[in-house]
Image (cartoon, rainbow, N blue to C red):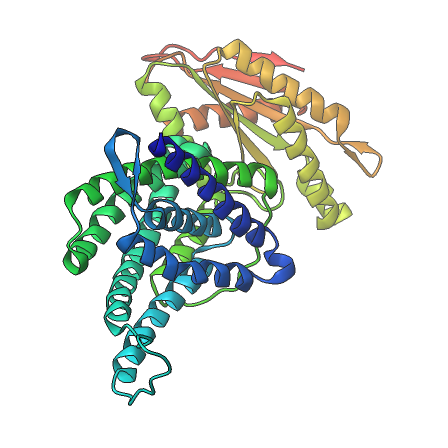
Length: 432
């Protein structure tokens, strides 16, 4: 059937298109990204020309143009790839170039039609009507592409909230939503200029959805197999346009992901404890789930720090943080509370299990951390709710009292307490 043959050819067109352009993009560090952008821009005229007059029949009565379903869809998905691997400031370069180039073409065509022409051969006159039509469609198509790129970047980024790091569904979702918008927007201009029927709108949309699925797989495979994630060095710039704003937003979200980390140890800092820690304890209290707070203090650290210097003290703090994070569970959260204090928040543990966890931390530090020939030890206070609603401050105060008792008992030990409803006494567990 010719429809199936057309469908196979369209898939082949998409594979060839993606292979060549993705190959150029892969070589951008050697050839420069300009080679990729030039190849992408060269395809713009044929893409618009085919979208205006060249249509084929597919199964299920679908009528579409390769210019729209293969070339334009591929271009938009490749620009999303540029954003993912580079940033929004790089994406804007071909879009601005295409938009200005198309406007220039329309302007020059309007001027050139006033030239006195020399006839080279019969019937060899310039078709300014075609140039006018193509110019208008290309300007309109590039303006829509401008909006498409903004939308697809924003949707791809926001889909992380629902789809996490599953790249393929994020690509497919962003592509299908934005290309639905694009099909409607481009059809409006196409219908106005060429009188295209509604079947072009419906068939083009169906073909674009199929193309999105193909390109999502191809881009996903490229991201997984062709390039490993690499860090990017970016210069700080002013927010001058929407694409730079997108890049600024990307940087801001990266900064937020890093904010709250203690630079010396890699643990979360006190600011994150005041927000995330409080929320965790409040949520556990509302759900009547037990939650523990483990407060860790380095024994005699001030004397140690003054005697050996801050560089050695920092090394000790890093070593202790490493032991704490290795000893606790993967679900527990470690915070650096102060210069020589750490806090661990543990959910869904009994008081006994929380004290045992604190004791394991104490034992690992006493065994593995030393400096200047001396073992470094810590004192630990543990506070655990008994399932009743308790706030962060009350839990912290109890852990602090337990820590004080551990210090008074001679240091290098763990003492735990458990909250209870009303005025019930706090039960302490002592371990040396």
